[in-house]
Amino acid sequence: MWLWILFGHLLCDFLFQSDRLIDLKRKNIIKGLLAHSFIHVNVYVVLLMVYWFIYGGSISLILLAAALIAIIHFFIDYLKIRLVSLNQATPYQAGLFVLDQVFHVISILLVLTLLGLGSFSFSGIYDGIVLFSAGAYPWETMERVVALGCIIVIGTYGAGYFLGILLKDFTPKDDIQKNHYTIANEKTEVRTRFLPNGEKESEMVSVKTEQLFKDSSQKIGRYIGMLERLLIIFLLLVQLPHGLAFLAALKSLTRFKQFDNKQFAEYYLIGTFSSSLIGIVLGVVALGVLQ
View 1 (spheres, rainbow, N blue to C red):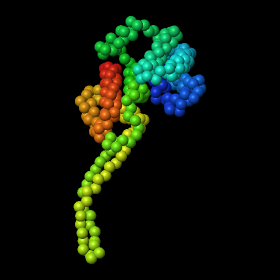
View 2 (cartoon, one colour):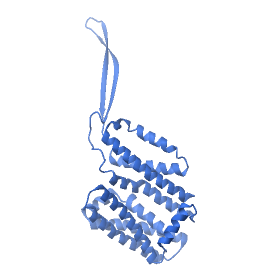
View 3 (cartoon, one colour):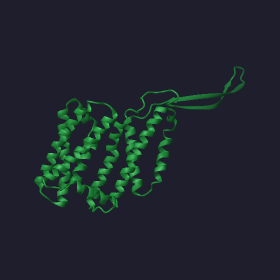
View 4 (cartoon, rainbow, N blue to C red):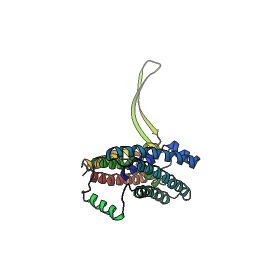
């Protein structure tokens, strides 16, 4: 059951958390968190009803678990928002993001254990990790589907949020810089004109053009990163790791001219390596789920 609730948590924290809801949290923290928690409890109920239909169990305990987890989620998020404003340093912000997610997972396990809907212990978790690493974990079909759903959400939206925090100090300034964001072209033209006496005169003219452009918005870059990590996971699942080289080459070609800008080149390399590493790790985990 914890896996189903985790899937719902990831959907609500990343996929269903719109910019409008984030702005509401900034303007009115209580109202924003109440709306966020309301979305959580509704998604939990829908997923757990599907779980109950497949596996059975006590409906009252299942609904109580959904409500308690949503309430605890409210207080964890409230504490995180208060702590976020204390320090804007990237390591602090990134660490807070990870700790926030860890405490949410712990709260799910604790509530299910207290209500008797699950039994969790350090030894049991360790044994599960060992079985998973050995490819001997006793997955059921729906558990595999939900686990893959968690991996996809983490690999796309979850990793996108995390990398946005991690790379904020390396993001190039959003301006137009000559010789850094330009495409130059030169061509020779033959121009003909008629003189007053009726004679025709031709001349060779060299025409130079230069087009300035801005970089894509961060939102576009985030979507590109999502697709990149999703493709990496897919390539590993179908056991075509050599496709990663083609993906890297294709991505580099689209940004080739901008590598003249040192700031952009550093940002691109750090972002690509980080995104690819996350995609590869999640691809390996997804492959373990399907085995």
